[in-house]
Image (cartoon, rainbow, N blue to C red; front, side, top):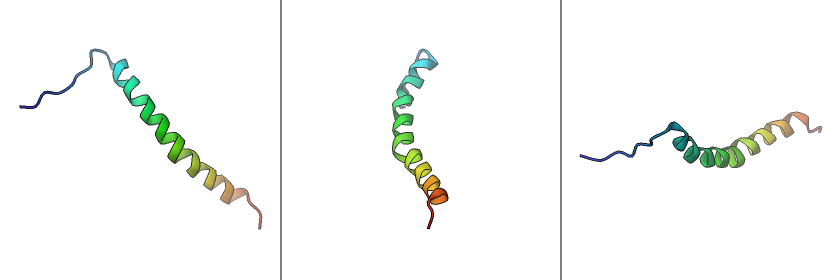
Length: 44
């Protein structure tokens, strides 16, 4: 049987997830949002 890691409080789990969410936002959503914005605003 495999042991599972459990956290005493839900805030500790969130503290571990926040850096990952920041990286996802910084390297995926922000450039994708800029690309959409530029594609709609650049004139030909």
